[in-house]
Image (cartoon, rainbow, N blue to C red; front, top):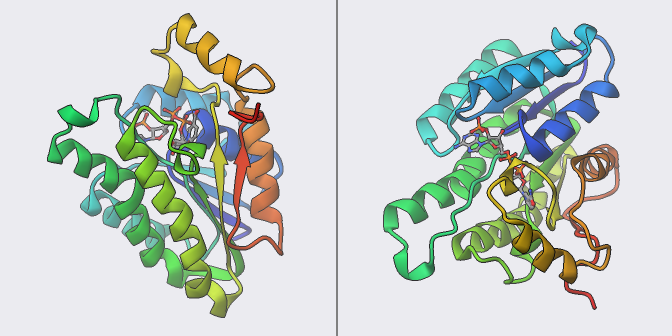
Length: 245
Ligand SMILES: NC(=O)c1ccc[n+]([C@@H]2O[C@H](COP(=O)([O-])OP(=O)(O)OC[C@H]3O[C@@H](n4cnc5c(N)ncnc54)[C@H](OP(=O)(O)O)[C@@H]3O)[C@@H](O)[C@H]2O)c1
């Protein structure tokens, strides 16, 4: 078996871009396990859109990452199908636009579980399978660096992911595995499908480059971080100069 990559939430947006980039650069014997949460049609579209010769390298797995049990079932499947992991990308994430005063404990818990708690335990479970010199990448967010987000719980979970990234360096030191995160600003993905033109215009005014980033720009950066042997404990911003002027 060649290089093995695992990526959660890899059928849409940023995760899909990273999966496609890794596949484009892959050798025939490499494999990539791509998870999704709910959207079967999108998962199939991701697969069918790949060059035919790349499709057999992909294992698509449905796993609800808000659920510890689903994550553990995914881990069991991985242990069954792969004997090692080289690159692990924890990307699946969710948010809410509910106002703080309307928060329920259940909704808070669902988002914290998906964005933070389940990834913590997934990485813990997969640690023994990680190869020497492997690479872990979290998708954080610039909303976890600056408190600009309209979603309090989202920003809090992403700030925690950035701290987790730095904290895990010590845990993975014995096998020389690097742990990094990317912190994107506003990136054009289905995440923003409900956004109005007025909202786009308002945000674009605050970005020095006056546009949202593309999935390809983020995927290229993620791929470079994953493959860099000396980056460790870094949280790399990519936001086009958001709020810098
Ligand atoms: N777009 C941005 O501006 C931006 C900026 C900063 C950070 N990010 C981060 O980037 C990551 C990807 O976001 P995106 O913009 O690419 O969004 P997206 O296009 O909506 O993709 C989200 C992906 O996560 C999966 N997912 C969602 N809930 C899940 C669950 N409970 N279990 C398993 N998978 C689940 C989705 O699968 P299903 O559709 O099948 O559920 C999908 O594959 C997130 O962590 C997000 O916080 C995005």
